[in-house]
Length: 456
Image (cartoon, rainbow, N blue to C red):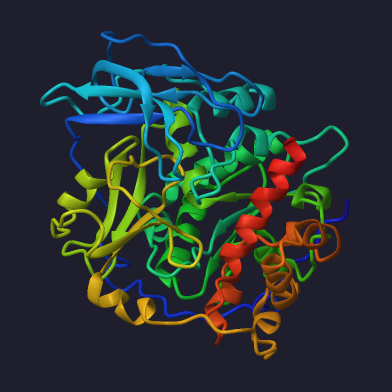
């Protein structure tokens, strides 16, 4: 397939420009959170089949030791985030609602945060198959929020030919800055991870797309590229216009190359693989050491946080422990505040603080009661056919019509004739709707019902 020349300064059509709200954390260095007394590692942390626990209650484990084995191609292993004793393997609450099988580890007092399990690898002569297996062994999933197994994404179908690795450093969600800080502070790890991903996929070049409101990140990545003096291919860092949802892979490809991925197809069909900067930076750090994913960078911010910032948090750390260390005022329950995992546009409000940080959690936002009063008092009105949602939808859908069909429970019609499957739930339609109709929430319900029907 012919390589496409990339553009500068182009933007995808439609979209919105919400306030960034990144000032509180964008210029602060990443800090490390201490270990909690206990961590809860859900087996369900990714898209695909659950792995199989390989530890028993009462067993001592060290940080980095495998505790769950992948049970299918679309599955990943998990590793102990702390050194301690397995206290239980039982159902525990999750952010999505249903309780899920989890491994509970009681941390040893004063345990080191150094990974104690792993075998350094010489990857200079490793084949693409060996690299792919090494990625799988890390337990890596997409750290941008989708949590799709990384080894599966880097596995190129036999009928496809990948020429370009696109690295997503946009981070367009308001408030979130974890990817920004990783690019600034861990740029060498990022470039190393990019080179591994290029060798795994066979890509001959890589392009890091970074929104132009992060000039320090662009400069840091460019400097790391120069230091690496990569020989496997050409790596570029490109500034793209700041617009939401630029972080969607289809929107980023539109900004970089000026073409649209056809409905129902993936970037690999056009010879490209897209990965998040946080994912590749973590691979650049873990692969040479032969270690598994035990922690991730999380943005903790919002009006209700006294010490906002980006923190390295052990996987499985209870959310309440995280908020206590970030200076969130203790209140009985969530009646006086709202906590969102992820960003405000695509994130998920939670009903309990008893859930842990998982591999897919990029941010924790805390809003006080006073911040929510205006939203609580908003009423939902009938659609006035203004067309604002149509003008903002980056996929070119008709959210107004989809919303009316959802209200009538015409879910099959939504999927078969109005391309509901192309909606990636960015929330632009809900953001601009003057009638305050929760369109994206309606679409999520419709998709879930269609999935259940298909499974039945």
